[in-house]
Image 1 (cartoon, rainbow, N blue to C red):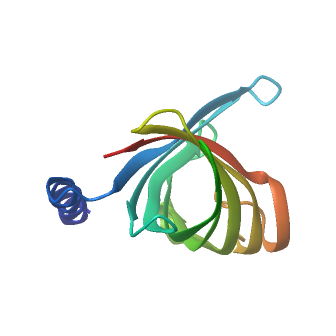
Image 2 (image 1 turned 180 degrees about the horizontal axis):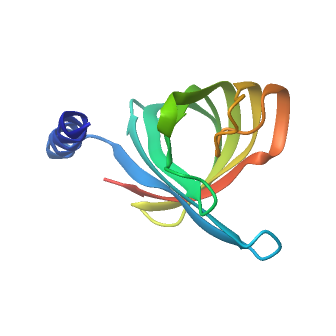
Amino acid sequence: MKKFLLIAVMAVLGAVSAQAQVRLGGEFSVWYNSDAENTSYMFMPEIGYKLNDKWEVGTHIGFSGNSDQEGLDFKLAPFARYTFLRAGMFSMFGEGGFGVATRKHHNTAFNIGLRPGIDVELSEHWSLEAHLGFLGFVANDDGIGEMGPSGFGFDFKSGTSFGLIYQF
């Protein structure tokens, strides 16, 4: 794991020094459920590389958990994004990818699908991003958080998220 993080940091620094179009951002949440007396949390950074005005590749990598479970859920979710509409500071995109999550004791879940989204450019470097649902397949028999329930279809509730992005 340490080697992977070192390689990832070196890749980011190399891309930034080469005047690359690198985007950093992500999502963070903390929620306290007073009925269950349970706190859940999620930290999901994102790194992307803009290939051109239409295409971007990247990955989400992070963890989630709650106060009732032992250990954390770790998730890796590479993606490819296509921006199909731009209107001033707004753009709409479709993101295709897959995710793999694991928990202590070797529980594993995965998903594959599409996520539509919007991006609002606040300035030259900052933007807000929203994913609006998930269309695809999820295999999650172990109930790993951030993956959603097992099945196939469109899930607006657990597939919706908001994030802040910084572009170099």
